[in-house]
Amino acid sequence: MKKFRVGDPLQASWEHDGTDVDYWEARLDTAPPVTLPVQPGAVHRWPLPAVPVGSHTVTVRGCNAIECGASTREDFDVAPVIPGAPHHLKFGASEVLLDLPQAAQLVQAYVCIAGSPPLTDRQLQALAGTFAATGLRPTRGNVLAFLDHEYGQL
Image (cartoon, rainbow, N blue to C red):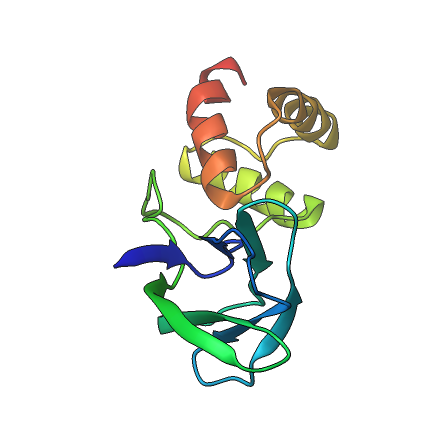
C-alpha cells in the first residue's frame, strides 16, 4: 500500500484510451462521486482534495450516457507529519533577558562577592559597552560568563 504524509499534494491517475467513455466518476472513500471530464490521451488525472490522516481508497470508473462500467480502486495511507527531535538541547539558567538596572545590580553583586569596591557609573558604562560589543544576549548566564572572563581587567 502506498504511503503519503498529510499535506502532500496527491493526484490519482489512471490509463484508459477513452473509448466509449463520456466522463469519469471518481470517489475518495465514501464521499459522493466526482464527475471528471475525459482528457485527451490515455492518461487521466484527478487532483485529490485535502486528505486527512488515515487509510483511504480512491475508486474510478468510466461512464457513458447508458451506464457506468466496472470500477478500479487504489488504497493508500496518509500519515501525520511528526516533527523531528530538537538538536543541541542544553540545560542551564533561565534565559530571561535583563534590563539595564538588573544587569547593573548583577555586576555590582558580582564585584561585591569578589571583594572589590562597587564600580563607578563610568566603570559600569565602560563594562556595558564592552559587553554590548560581544553581541551576546543580556541574560544572567551570559553576563556572569562575561564577568568571569573580563573581571581580571577591572
